[in-house]
Image (cartoon, rainbow over all chains, first blue to last red; front, side, top):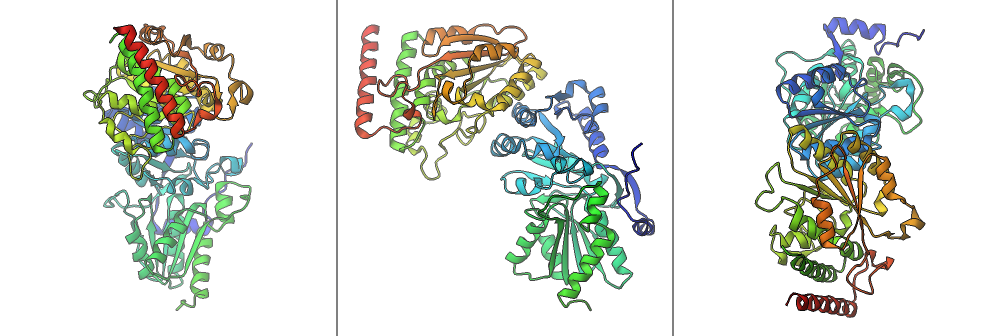
Amino acid sequence: MSAPAPSLFSPAAQDVISRLGLKKGRANLEEFASTLQELAEQDRQILAVTSDSRGSGKLGPFGKALPQQIVEVGIAEQNLVGITAGLAAGEKKSFGVSPACFLTARALEQIKNDVCYSDVPATLIGISAGVSYGALGSTHHSLHDLAALRAIANITILVPADNFETREAIRAAASASHPVYVRFGKAVMFNLHTPATKFEVGKAIKLREGTDVAFIGTGETVIHCLLAAEKLSQEGIQSQVVSMHTIKPLDANAILEAGRECRAVVTVEEHSVHGGLGEACAGVLMQAGVAVPLRIVGFPDEDTVTGSQADIFRHYGVSMEGLAKTALELLENSGSLA
Amino acid sequence: MTDHALQLKSIQYRQKLLRYITEAGAGHTGGSLSCVDILNVLYNRIMNVSPDNFDQPDRDRYIQSKGHSVEALYVVLADQGFYPEAELETLCRYQSPFVGHPTRKVPGIEMNTGALGHGLPICVGLALAAKLDGARHRIFTLLGDGELAEGSNWEAAMSAAHYELDNLTAILDHNTLQITGHTHDVCSNEPVDEKFASFGWYVVSVDGHDLAALTEVLSAKPAAGKPTMVIANTVKGRGVSFMENVVSWHHGVPSPEQYEIAQAELTQAESTLLGQLN
């Protein structure tokens, strides 16, 4: 018998979730699969391309319902991306679906040349991204993908924080006429948005207002930012929380607004601290002359600790407690704690 | 178009590609000379593609996987009317669309290639898309000997057979040379025919400079349910005596003296051919 997966949330964090009234949704992976199937039922030009990954991509039902719209290439990621690009060049709306770790490392040259440089309207879906695979180890982690793809011209990079953002990201990708990369994990997510929320590629969503510290998070880290903000509010510190679902093109205005409104900025990502959201935000702030105390929370340049996604998040401070502590220290060290 | 007219075109393409490579001071001379007869037959006899139908989904597709031999392709596309040939005077110049490897900035180019081992997977996607649509157009790609060492070719070779892509024809520019030397010394791909056959392909060998033979092979009805591999036996540097089978001409650029000798040889060949015509 395997041990139950440890929770991503401490008991105290779970209390805060209840207090905020956040409702549990499902894994973004499942939201992706059902959204893509709904779209594909309406548009027969939509194809899912898999590398022995229909199970991991939750595309079993898609394959059963739409057998003519799923292309299996076997365990061959370079081939997967080349074929996905070729299908797009052949007037299909192709979605190449593969674990983010393999998709964006092994097939990086195909992404760069066949998809981005050739500018075909293909979408690449990096499933089980970041440290979703937990104890399977670094072979299965993708802590490099945002950095690698940020440096490649002509690709939109989307990292949804909950089911709503996932659904909207997939819809946006299906109607895009240029390359898109969407990455997400497989943990069950809480719904962070109200029905009134609008999703627009390249426009960050502000989840909470505050002027002491700004948390700019992306993907599955955003809920931890929200919880940290709520915890800090108990100590009289008001935090802004921004879901930066689009890593490229980056919403520079939202970053500058956060940097100008708040006394400190904490960026949070399920990615290496090198080349991801944090450094992107730092670049925007510095080049605009906004000198605000900043901490980049992510995974350091080291052999990642063994453990579940929850263990790894906690170890590196991607948790309500960890983020609240980082924010407090940042405010204290910069002398801006009121 | 008669065989003689086609032969004349091959000589003229060689004259032109040498001119533009020499003027640019850069290019892949040997490989362009080895594949230009194949391109000649494809564009003038086999494929249904032209500036008039290039926006039509049912046009035939050509992806040059061995992208470095782009000068041959540029000359042929100019001849097809995709752009005025004079534009090739900008080859590799600042802000020219005529990059040293194929890009879609150039009319008539389908996909950006140049990194090796990319064309075949792309063509599997294009061929699958056509199959799914019940379309009848064909997909062609040109592979180099050296690039067969890229594993992605063999991933795609498996997929093409698995999906029974008989609308896909790959042509191997089998000149047996690559930048370091002979392929059998660098990383042997032989027996390349048996390899593709064992992967489930229909394989046919042909003299890659025999325009009539190429025409016959490329216009033949494909083997049902199988992708086709045409092993075109070619000579790298073909048409210029001192370039033939000489490794250093992979990306060698002729000196002014060498250029004059090469053009004189090709002019002589042209005169001989015209003499035969008359």
